[in-house]
Image (cartoon, rainbow, N blue to C red; front, side, top):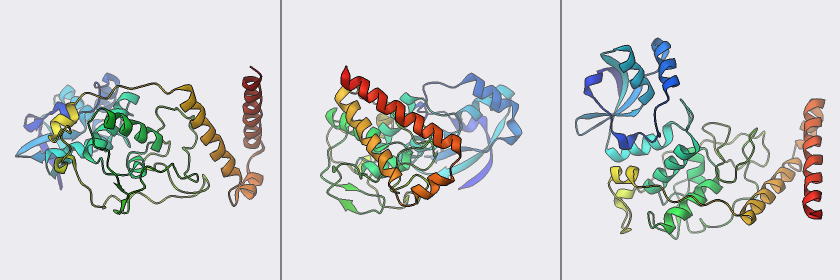
Length: 297
């Protein structure tokens, strides 16, 4: 891996490596205004071609400014390596992905690593396990990935109990309302942790565990070419039913209650600002009142 100035004319813009719906004009202009402070783009050298993998807005800003070269980090790899990289990179920096773009990133990652557990995938992409499980189910039903009897966890071990319900101690995203269809954590690179309290730290996911890519899959309907994976149409998105929404909200309310029962919470609560405690009580009272209104019809 090395960083150097690469002529713009040598770069290849491969559409299948850009998971965004479109470039944002405002972001391109903002990058052009702060050109000297921008980090290098990332390109993959695949079969002697320089493929842009991260930095499409920076590349567009260079074109706007009439630059002849751009500083780039060069990585030797395959098309699959490049696609695996782009499915994760914009979840953590740059212009935030839209909901549709995040779903596309999860779909691509699942197609490349369908043997990963839901938890490992959620931690890798900083999204909820519910979202990963939902997209996995849709991809399996569409016969775009196989339904494996076991999955590989972050520790590299194969678990045959991958389909068990979520750990009740798993941590919810902080400081962000829950969306039943799309729950990205507010902690950037950190996904759904395993701590029993929200203030506890979680270890980063193991990125060195052995994996199996789509290229080695024997599933007959699974695209094995990276371009086919990126360009295959998204699975049809189904809206959550009221039963699914109520079950999800019930789980999350119980998890919030579990937080208040976690070791150290009472002491932390006593040290909180009066305003913060007041917000907590107001929210709890409103939730109870709303539940009573729904019960009475």
